[in-house]
Image: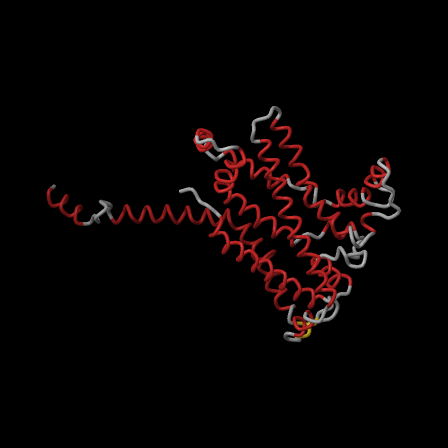
Length: 319
């Protein structure tokens, strides 16, 4: 028995397991890995077929002249050089940047204000959360965009309400180049529910003891908000900022429906995505549209990287 025990002990490694035990664990791990990959297979197929495949195809098409009818012809950097001389593209960038840099900060500020109000523990909180979140679910839908167009039309609800207080208007808000874009900005601000819910969850994670200590020291609500709430909520603000900026650059439905697909009046609502759609599916210049799509990817990527770089100066992580 002593010889057998000695042989067994020699066959065990430092962890106390024998080669047979290790082989059994390896087989079990292999079976678990196969099961995991099997469950991941639909997602992996979707990633390759729906995401990576079209992504690489659009990259190739961006260097070609492709009309959807004839085979693509390689043109090199012509599409990208052409974008430098396209005034409508430059205008669409101006409109899109104005839309993003105005609507996103206002939306986040409103979402935070509503979240702070709801965080005070009012009665019927679940109902208010649902009511405020509802616009985020409907804001990008065609139905809401049509309703928005009717509201801000010449005989729409907005002009009817203004007429009751003596302000007469013979033109629609969406028909005026000076106000058309701002109606879509207002629509985006109205969909504050999603960031509001995230802000509310973040506010619930801030320990109450910080506010109690600040109150003992004589700090008022504004000082507590600036020195406690904002620093501890800064990771949530950063998260919402990145998501909303990316989403705003992809806005399409609102401008398409409100302007009937034209980007009018006078290209005042010509979002970059709408102009890309016109080039690709109206003018059948799919190669040029693909180059425009990659320019949008670069713009969003640069702004996202810039947000991450700047976050080190204002985002506070409580460790």
